[in-house]
Amino acid sequence: MIKPEFGDIVEFTDIYKRREKNERRINDISGNSYCVTVKYWNALEKKGSGLYLGLRTISNGVRKYDDDDGFWYSPQEYFTVALVCTGPRSNPIYVKLDTKYTKDES
Image (tube, rainbow, N blue to C red):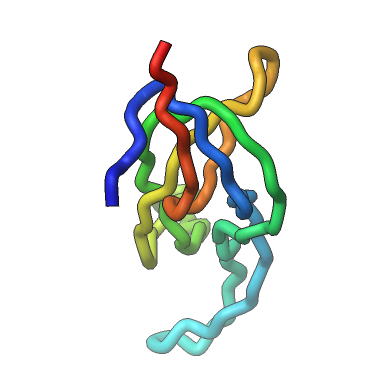
């Protein structure tokens, strides 16, 4: 598979949006419960095209609060996505790597 280069026009079918949900968990040692925030990337079906900017590594994980250290984030899994900009006035978005692209020969 030939990977796109910076500036190539790519077509995508799925984008990633950051989501989070709160869960209550039980501490194994003390038996006390605590609240954690699970942060994950949700794939949404959305077709479009844009300018390929590069690759990024993103993670799903857990954010927890500790009295001594404050908030901390613990990644559980990593995966690589493509960073694509859909227009001159829009923020770049994360898309799946199985994007189709056309080489701009100009």
